[in-house]
Image (cartoon, rainbow over all chains, first blue to last red; front, side, top):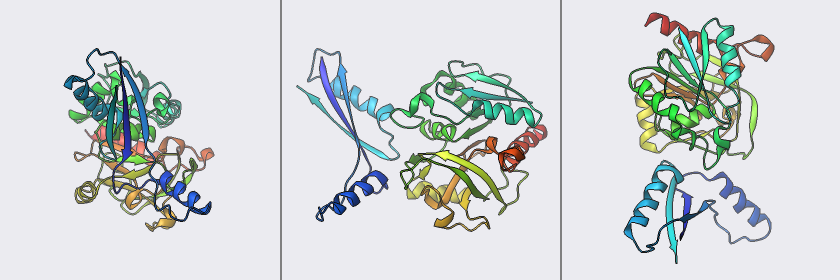
Length: 83
Length: 230
């Protein structure tokens, strides 16, 4: 079993209403040095694969992220294959 | 003339659409999301709701429903497709219309009447309107904040693909008339070929005076007239 974490975040330049609200709330709590916050998602996947290092796994995760997990119009993705 | 209303798991405006079309005198039936057979329909409507619970992103899962393969084919052949609210979100996710939806800037679900200015009266969905006309219809969404990159926005405007913009009651396009933060006040767009229309407001909830507005009728009447002409 391979564990994968896929991180989906909003692209640079895309307005993030949740991030703006969190920034303002933190500032209101007195954390004046907070200049920005971005809200994203972490999707944890369990893959049935015996070969953790296989390029195939990375290719598959990339493909799944592009097709479903992230919307390329507004989102970027990154992932980490956990040992 | 036959309309088809797609039903995804989690759709909740399919009966409103069905009713609106019946009230306006056309034939209509439901299309289950697992069906790939949409032969015989002249117009396919993707209704509002929360398809697949809005999990992941609005419309992201519905886009892979079997029926969407048929809808893509239907649209590619010039068939008329109308996506309302969640239906619009599905069309965006499916790549049938450009752009994406973000949460409303207020981070609130907004359910109220809005004003819409007609920007393009040359589409099959707005042929009975006139440019500049202001229509009153309700919106009901959390993610209706339209976004597209600059290049896409420019292309949309150049090709006259922006059909409806949120406005003030007198038709001014200002932030005061913009309920959700949509770029350029965009409320509805058509595909380049003009046969796919997506909008966040609900014309089907504005077809009888008891509902507070009958302005939504003009969208369906335009569609019906366009179908008769073709």
